[in-house]
Amino acid sequence: MVDGIEQYYHQIAESMLAAIPDEFTTARFDAIFHAGSSTYEAEYLRKSDGVARGFQPADEGDRAFRQLRKKFKEAGMPVWGQATFELHSDGKFNMKWGYENCDENGNTRFNEDEEVKRRVERHKRLSGS
Image 1 (cartoon, rainbow, N blue to C red):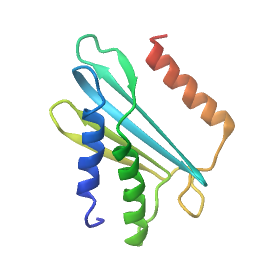
Image 2 (image 1 turned 30 degrees about the horizontal axis):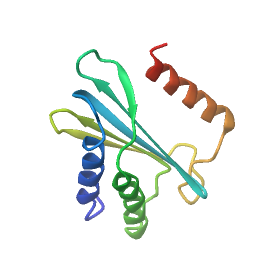
Image 3 (image 1 turned 60 degrees about the vertical axis):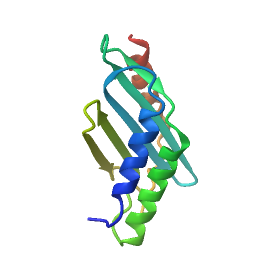
Image 4 (image 1 turned 90 degrees about the vertical axis):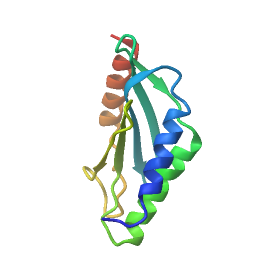
């Protein structure tokens, strides 16, 4: 385990809670790190109807993901290229680290076809189609 990372979990959760406009059942915040860039996307399931909606967490959430990567590197642990923070309305959470398709520095290798597929799937979830 990497010491001192709990504070970053709290920062991510707080950045999400500050931005979700409705009551929700679950929410997720995804981070993808490429060499020289990063992508952050978030969505939640609205409690009233179970419909997926996108939202933009506060900037502290993005910073917390970057700090988590830094802590992993400082601890000599493998650096992940993707991470998902899943938050439940009761306050429970789950953090998933992704090492798939990463280079030697822990950055996700860019694949245009996979990126298009990921964006299309997200658009379908959020548009209800």
